[in-house]
Image 1 (cartoon, helix red, strand yellow):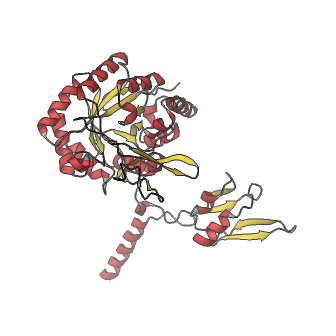
Image 2 (cartoon, one colour):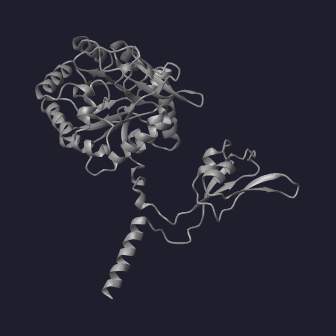
Image 3 (tube, helix red, strand yellow):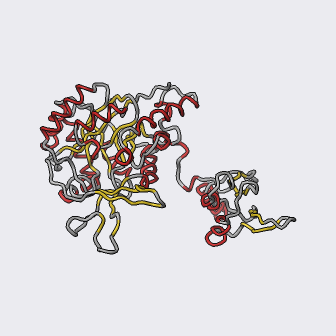
Length: 426
């Protein structure tokens, strides 16, 4: 079996699967159950001054029969006394010394507050700290969470305050509710962060009950924006991880999260630069034992490819991720329909005819049987037909021989500018 151990900025873990700071890591009982199930680490639910939570707190967005395509919550940080949490962290670490326990922290942006809580949690033996600069609701209104995480200077300053006294690695958890996450990631690095984690939840309103007109969820008829997570946010999270991983100014490890539901998605995050992943919604939906499939699937994947250590895949796809201006304008793919597999549902024809490039023809063979065929000279390779097709393998996207040398938009613009300059010289 492959070696699944990870090292995130000095934090050792038996595998790359951690539980994110959230309801599943609210107590020692839960974290110990998670470790027994096989999770490699857990980020304890955010510690700080205990708060009062509301009821109700959660909502889910279903799609096409899937119960929890997206998940929304208006729950805040721990509502239990700090001393109780610290006692349980100590007991859990003693019982599971080889598993990673990271304390998520959130306090007001004051130096003495950060010094105080960092010292307290490190005294009970945590393996690392995660500074929560991402929570978008409730705490943000009090100047913490995303309110701090959206201001690069505050990210840098508070990271520095934590690092002044920290004896364990400091991870900075970043908010996605910002135009460019690399800006705050760079600020965290300037402040001395040993790693960054992303993404925290996205500002959201799960829905409105069209009968009562109440928001979903609501508290006595009133609602508030919450944090959105789950499978629906994975593409957003993966992009932000990739943007940070390819930045030359963010030279620290990344803990990736946001919609990770299985081992395949964990591999995607790791290929795009994450040292390991954190999981929340999938565990809340299916329970702690989902990690068994994650571990087994990852092991099989690595073994099949002859990869000895999971750390060897980290960042392997980052070089393939670039800007639009660096894409080859002369690269060409077209759609081809396999008549033996096609069920003639006509979804591809409808989509192409109504919303794409009208290049799929409805034809009849000599026996009068209908079939679909792509006019390849008019096909732009947009992929839409293969996306809407309900039958795997019925439509393939086929690369055509490149009749012209590769040319990107940036190269094209440079060539045009050079030609214009030559004309001026003449």
